Length: 447
Image 1 (cartoon, one colour):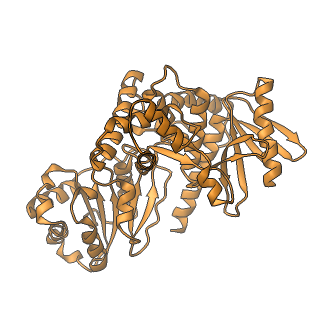
Image 2: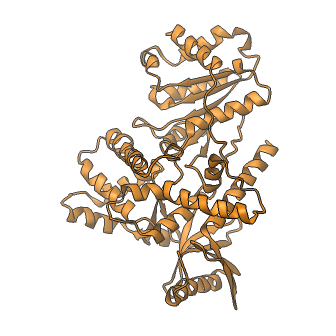
Image 3: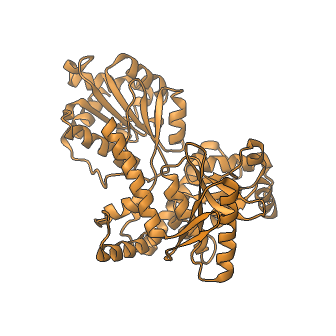
């Protein structure tokens, strides 16, 4: 077994792995803690590992000081009985001079596929001079749970499919500000492509039919491998029907009672507690997200319906059971995922008059940022409905500005409580991406 591992280590040291498009995520390592990358399947976690390695190499770290192992490799199957200690032993047999003297950077992909990996990582960090980065996403253990299993000995970092800014980078489009007329037109054209393709790196450049098939493959992999297989669900059709119901209704309110009623109407005898578990599992897989009501009372947050969003708006169109997905809801889903890249807690708001604000982003001081999403406000009734809820919310929360994200309209509306800005989706997404990139750059500079 040791010779196989030694060969894999040396093969990697001689290879030039594909590192892809630089992501707008800056990972800070903390001494004594493993770094865990978490996110949905196929969002680019393994590729991001190679980007971290490239940064080390460019900073002067020797390639020999990098230990990379992908435990999904079938040649490592005997490790299940031989034990993970063989990995460290094989590495230090190649480089004995580095043991306890030089920093070794350990990158372990799909670590959860090996039994008793937690005590191995713990011992490695305690007894060796090393930094450890982990990823995981499979039927055996989801990436979020990899971090949980470390019991405080790890720091988690979320990775999502491409943001619009990352999509532009992948397409080789200059997005530096300010945009000239030509660059703006090019960015607007690329937004149309992003609207169709979404953010999963693997589907960029694919024809529509192939893209749909790949998205559907992701959908089934999450359901059957991450959920049904690992939880040994006795009635998988109920979970599939529930997932389709939620995907068909992104950017809409739901309750466990309503979902239970839907499954009952389809002939499934599933307790409400099980339905709630199914929804939680879908969230654990980073496939769906639930958003609670913005309220200072935790009890009111828990009893009120939540909103549901998917990891990628284009995936929704590929797996939706409807003839055509609601484009307004898709636009709201797109705005949500853009915000979710760097805001872990998002809410929706209900005014005292019953109006609804789609998304609320609380800042560190608790002051809410109010965001409404509407394809177009050219219709007078639509404008009145959308702005009335915002004006009321601004008055009730004490903020003097709010945003409405549209497909193409841009203007300002001034009232007695403040200003509402209409912003085209492409510009809003680009601004959000720039904020995330600036935050990562600042973190990189300070690290």
